[in-house]
Amino acid sequence: MTQHVAIIGLGLIGGSLSLALKRRPDVVITGFDRSYKAADEAYRRGIIDAVAPSAAAAAREADFVIFAVPVAAAVSLLREAPEWGMKESVIVTDTGSTKQPIMQAAAPLLEKGVTFIGGHPMAGSHKSGISAAIGHLFENAYYILTPPPGCSREELDKLETLLGVAQAKLAVLDAEEHDSMTAVVSHFPHIIASSLVNLLADEEERRPFIRRLAAGGFRDLTRIASADPVMWRDITMQNKDELTAQLDRWTAEMQRVRNLLQDSDPAAVEQFFDQAKQFRDQLPTVSRDTAQGALYMPFDLHIDVPDHPGVISEITRILAAHEISLTNIRIVETRTDVYGILVVSFRSANERDTAAHVLGRETDYSMQIL
Ligand code: NAD
Image (tube, rainbow, N blue to C red; front, side):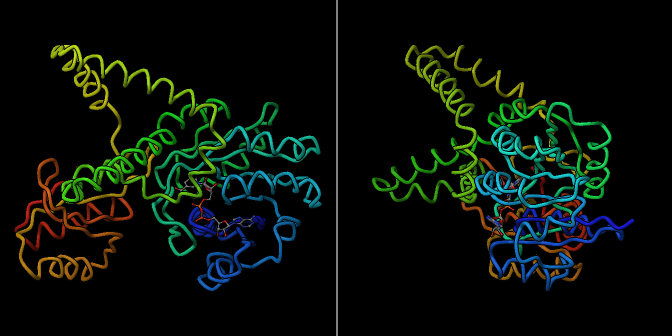
């Protein structure tokens, strides 16, 4: 039986989800985006089957409605949705990075008897928009579902079956648990990364050379500060209670570290680093067989190449000959804390590993996956 899916918001996440869902021959996708350009590109690239003139029109005949718009827009659309005249059997979900405000905004829909199950696919990219959409974005990534109290197992199963084609690791959490955990592992690190970069910008006014020293480890550590500011404004504003609590804990922790340094207590300072190292060394890593975490990290290959002209074109020629696409290539100027001078990023661990294999076969350069 044909499943009609409406996707509202055809950006990175909506487009990628649509590409994944279209692997199922029984799925027909109607899309809507407030940007005509995004909807047009999605249709022309075959990412969706039809364009609707409004969110309500896309949702009206759908069996599943997926909101893949920024979280503030999802809240407003959810408030309007009870008036859309959707099918009684419809299952509505979203992809937003915060869950409690979304679940609250969905309350009137639930009161009308419509099934709403919150969703958060924990995979992404520093790029946004339909042009960055890829069908395998969610493979091996955690995809959290937050059903409201009283949601039936049958409805949850229906949504899980639909999303199964994205090959993500589906997990069910309470919305509050979700927001509290993502505050720690995702939202708060974005604040710290942006704050470190802002400190660097201040320092650069006094010492312009510092920019060059920041090209290696600092750049990698703060990569997430390049994410879309509007999206992160919305996410942090929506999760502000969790985040202000985190900031209080962080401030206390920084005060503790400050005291350790002030007291010149080497054993205590070493213990601070050692405790973090022991815990971090045991965290799961991203590889072909494991899940992506809450923070988007590209799949990087560090290649130790001689610093001479033509080396980048040699690498890109070999990758092109094997039809392996890269998402980013850059030269790292400091070698103090990272391996190799050339860093090539790929969309998946699979592409990165294949690249390492062919480059290992066709060049003498040593390589490392960190
Ligand atoms: P995006 O900017 O790539 O796409 C959002 C799309 O929504 C755009 O095409 C925009 O025109 C459209 N849009 C905005 N307001 C709209 C409205 N009122 N009606 C219709 N369309 C509207 O953003 P994205 O990265 O795809 O993120 C979408 C959602 O997924 C967000 O809620 C975000 O929190 C969540 N998310 C993002 C990531 C990530 O890393 N980018 C990861 C997981 C979840």
